[in-house]
Image (cartoon, rainbow, N blue to C red; front, side, top):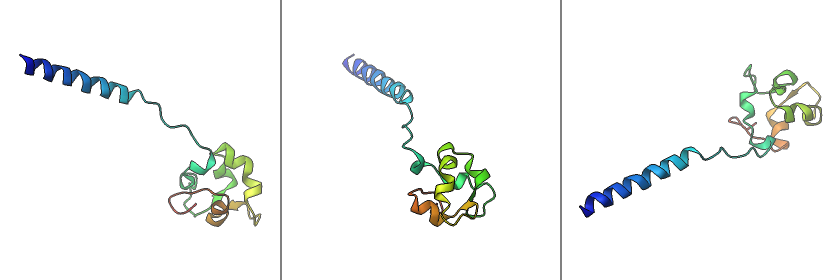
Length: 90
């Protein structure tokens, strides 16, 4: 009888732990440096155009400042200099 109670208590404890884990909120955003900018590069050219940057409000508002060579797109080097990162280094 004790073993049945022990197993039951253990099952209840595990179920409660699983329920708590499902209610954990996602981590808060830490700003633009955590954004995966490769998702913004919709045409896959390795750079983010001004239109593509509209997908991220923070990036869009800083676009002119980050576009060091003023060519209308953000290269991986310009994004790296700004401290951003993505799957291909931008």
